[in-house]
Every structure is written in structure tokens, then in C-alpha cells.
Image (cartoon, rainbow, N blue to C red; front, side):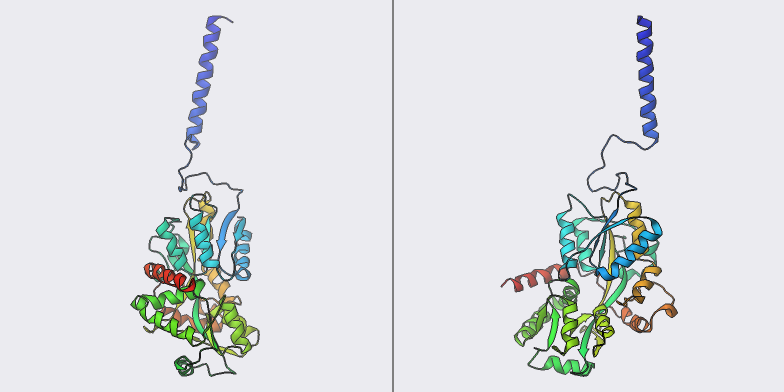
Amino acid sequence: MSGVSRHSSILTRRVCLLVLAAAAGCSGGTTEPPTAGSSAGRPDPHAALVVYCAHDQVFSDPILQEFTRKTGIAIDVRHDTEATKSLGLVQRLIRERDNRQCDVFWNNQVLGTIDLIAHDLLEPYRGPGWQRIPSVFKDSDGRWCGFAARLRVWIVNTEKMPATDLAISRFLASNDLSRMAIARPLFGTTLTHYCTLWDADEGQALKTWHDRSRRLGLIEVPGNSTVKNLVARGTCHLGWTDTDDFFVGLDEGHPVAMRPIRLPSRHTICIPNSVAILRGTRNLGSARRLVDFLASSETELALARSPSRQIPLGAIDEGTLPDQVRSLRPYVDDGVPLSGLASSRSACLAWLRDEYQR
């Protein structure tokens, strides 16, 4: 090959390389990998959206399946155990911060989700779902959004005692609490319940009540559903649980009634589900669509009509709600604000862990 031909061939190859490089730049290609914790990586349209879910599987699976049916987005859902599911999943997300597996966290309460903010694990998003939820039930920066709430309630066996505030007060004033049950307060909504009591006076009244109740025979069990079972069977006269577990007992035909639990401030304890996107997801678009779906009136209505009878938080046609759910809506307005309880949760949980390690 002549020198001219070789020079021409080399020049042609260089031009081709420049054209290819320019084309890659125009199509969004990059030679730099996405930074850790960023959401700049290319989404994988074929990857399933990984959802950690603390809500009861029997209620959450139909919702997630409907999302997949409507959007075509596959869901890989990971649940945890009944007793530790909300706290267990929060701790798992913290452990995985440098090797993130989860795209969206559907928690069955709020305080554990708020704890993830301190670890900088949540991706802000203020979409249509976030916008329809009242401000008291969401993070102002969009890092989490509440929806479909439960109330903390007294469940009472009406064959053992009247389901009235006066009868409950008299029972609590007695010197025998061996017929009352609560879930161990280290986890779940009972932990939230304890944190609301702690917040009033940095735990002074709570510690006194906790010590006295245990000395007088208070029964502690792994979860709220066990409380429901003990009261429904008449083994216990009353206990603390959530509205969804109460309705299970009622639907099973047991002689049970409920009364909303009132704090000394007269607030109720209204505990929404919450949804948050994990920072670093490579499926940000799909994650946002799931957040909007969960915080939609469609999902809130579906959960209201389900056996769990969860209470919508956003605007909704009251006439579409079951009567039992509609009757609970006024108690939501009396709910104690939960978004400011992060420090109380940390202090209360540290005390409880010490209490139960003795």
C-alpha cells in the first residue's frame, strides 16, 4: 500500500471514531459511571421494581398486583415477619445503604420511615399522589407520603365487660391487669403508640404506667393480631390493637367492640401507611408511578373497602365509603401529629431496648 493510501485510511478511521463519539454524546451516553446514591443511572425497563412492604400481605398483594396489571411494571415484593416487620425492614434498609436493593418502601406506619431521613436514604418526590394528601400526613419535602390510615383502639369482649370509656377507666384503675393484652412495644404500631405517650413529658408518665401495668399482670404478646385473638376468645377482657385487626375479629363473629384510644391530650392515634422512594433507585420513573398509585383515591378506596377498612386521608367521595369507615373519618381529624416525633422515637426505643434486655 502506498504512503498516500495508508494516510488516507488512517484519516478515514479517525473521522469514523469522531462521528461515533459524537453520536454517543447526543444519545445521552457517558463514560462516567453514576455516583453512588444518585438516581442518574439508566433505568432498566425490564427490571422488576423491588418493593419492601410492611403492610399485611393479604391486603397489600392485591394492590400491587393491580398496579402491575394497569402499568405493566413488574413488582418484586419483600415482606417481613408479623412481629418485627416495620422495624425489621427499616433496619434492613439502613444496613443496605451501601448496597441498595430496594426501590420503594411501603411501610405500615410512619415513624420508621421518618427515621430513614436521618440516614439520607429517601428520594424527594412531590407528585400528584403527594399533592392530594393533607400536609399533616406527609413530608413537606416529599420524602414520604402517608395514605390509608388505621386507628389505635381498645378492643373489648362485650361478654366480659361493657365497651364504654367509663368501664375501661375503671378496669385500668384496678389492681389486676391480667385480663388486658398489648403487643410488645418494641415494634410496629404499639411502638408508635408508646412514642406518642413518651413525647408528652419525655417518658415520665409512660415509664410509671409501664412499670405498674407489668407488675399488675399486663399480658404482652408478639403482635396486634394475637391481642385480637385473646380478646375475641375471652381469654382477655380488653386490649390495644388497630382498627384492621379489630375488624378481622368482628368479621369472624366474635363478641367484640372498639373504642378509639385517646391520649391525655385528647388526641387520637391515627397511623397512616407511608410510601417512600429509596435514593439511588435505577427505576425512578416506575418508582414514582407506584407512589402516585398508592397515594391515589383509587387505592385509598380499595383499602377502605377491603376487610382491613383503612381510612382514606385524601379527598374522596364520602358516599363511596363503607358505613364503618365513614364513621371513623372524624377521628382522623383528632389524630396526634406524628411527623415531629423522630427524637421521641429514638429516646423511647432506646429505653425499651434496655427494659427488655434486663
